[in-house]
Image (cartoon, rainbow, N blue to C red; front, side):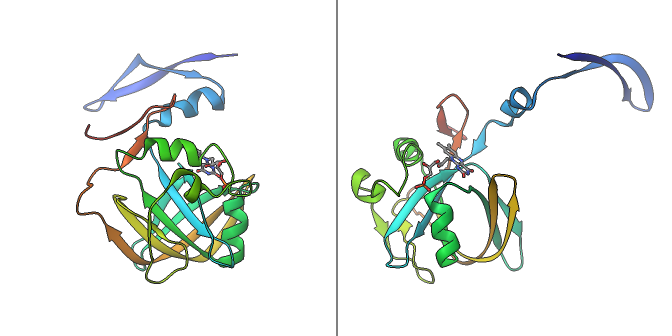
Length: 187
Ligand SMILES: Cc1cc2nc3c(=O)[nH]c(=O)nc-3n(C[C@H](O)[C@H](O)[C@H](O)COP(=O)(O)O)c2cc1C
């Protein structure tokens, strides 16, 4: 059931009626307007150091000093179990050529498949955490968990960034435009 509101608008202090129409819709319909959304890859590993990776759209900067990044991970994800176990993860900004990697790593679970082997993902050793960096990523951030917050069916893991890296070759990160369209801005 949709509702149409007539709102009061204001230009240069003059109030007028109409012009700004707002329609109430479902959450599902409204949240589709979030696109384009930046996408990251979250790299984690098990206690033996075997890595896993999944894409995430729900990631944000939460502090400047110290630098911190937070990512929201569904309770059922293998990544969730690994971050709970080790307290470490790496946030990766994928480059323009990593669209298939994003799609593949988001389509299966590390519980069932070694995604790094299956997709041939090349890694580099991180400096201060166990999960590896991804080669040719636009940027990689090594994170240690400093806080967690259960929010509905996800947990927000807040990680302090203990080392940051950028590519000299790739500058623009990948965005999700919805409907399986991933591209960079600009480009
Ligand atoms: C573009 C994209 C964005 C996603 N964003 C999130 C997210 O923010 N949080 C989340 O828990 N899952 C997200 N997912 C789903 C997981 O990546 C997916 O369930 C993945 O297979 C989980 O892998 P894992 O079980 O190996 O951890 C996203 C998937 C895609 C393709």
